[in-house]
Length: 141
Image (cartoon, rainbow, N blue to C red; front, side):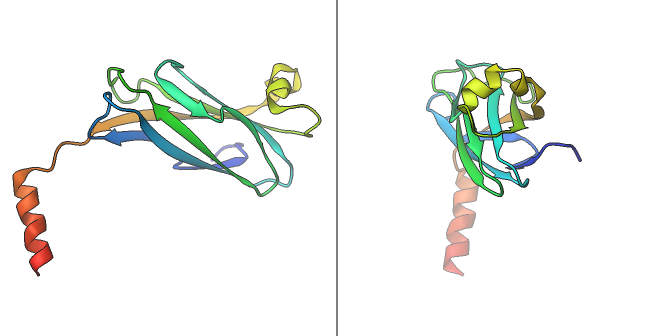
């Protein structure tokens, strides 16, 4: 696999899927787990800060700890083609002496390893009439 020390769920791609994709905010949750015996300073960057919001973008995960991150595809944006945008997840062993943001501004922060996840978009269609009838039949059985 790779030398990346964190387990990212989902780990293959980031999928934004919604009926109102592009019209309303579309948040997803990413779960990160530190599989190492040392604290990790983490930073997440994206290809377009106007299109995506990351909360929190910089943080620390204790050994064997977890962190939830919310990534939002902002409203009123044209939905781009899948595979065009990506997020880089950076991680580096961290002593905790400085805040993670300051750590990444230092020389040690430049030693971070990264994992890139591409973004996919799926505008979910309205429930089709035939599908609705099939679901009604399933309920009767």
